[in-house]
Length: 155
Image 1 (cartoon, helix red, strand yellow):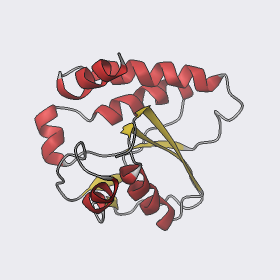
Image 2 (cartoon, one colour):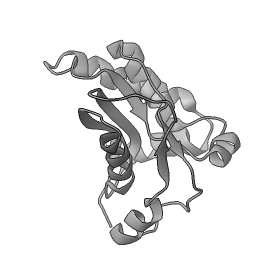
Image 3 (spheres, rainbow, N blue to C red):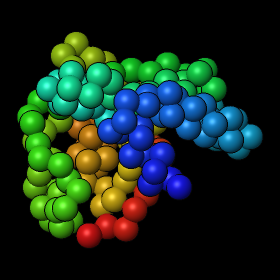
């Protein structure tokens, strides 16, 4: 079922699924003692070409739903500066190489000592989230926590 939902979200022009899942997850987080641990929510970006083709970033839609529930702003701090092939059929090492040097932080961004909730749609090996988190830490983030819609078996 979750695979079908994710497929619709990513490839069948159903951004409302991401928003719904984010809102639902956010409501669950509100019941936990750590829901006030973050200053902002940062979605993993898509390359501009892919975003234009799809019409939206499914991860940003998830982030918006989380933001609505948690009352924490979404900040699009990261830029995907290089086009990359899909990670789907790559090994763990190929995934790490595929996202190496791909992400940058927007200029004039001050995240010093900020507590960030970094979100993505699916985590398989963690290569994408790791690359993004490293950029945030290098730019002064105090903490970077992760949230995803789903996690799959790493290759």
